[in-house]
Length: 89
Image 1 (cartoon, rainbow, N blue to C red):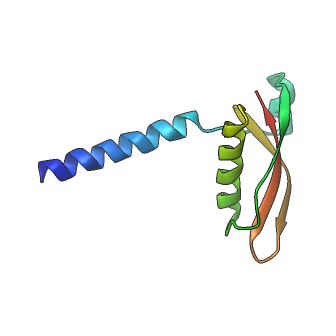
Image 2 (spheres, rainbow, N blue to C red):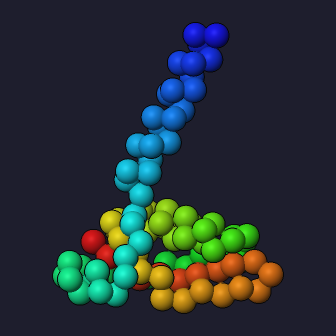
């Protein structure tokens, strides 16, 4: 039972630390207020099944591009969801 608790705590801490490094969604006002620098654009595929999945995918793609923030600029629903975002640092 102790082994199970140790593994569960390890997974929980790992999940929290991943979230701490994920790119954060911002608004247009945040971009202007924080004077963020645009470093590119990312697009999700049409494989996401909800708007939250699309935002999670955009966050991951922004991380991979070296960004700390992303601004969703377009979203589409066609049975599945896809989205486009500008990436900022």
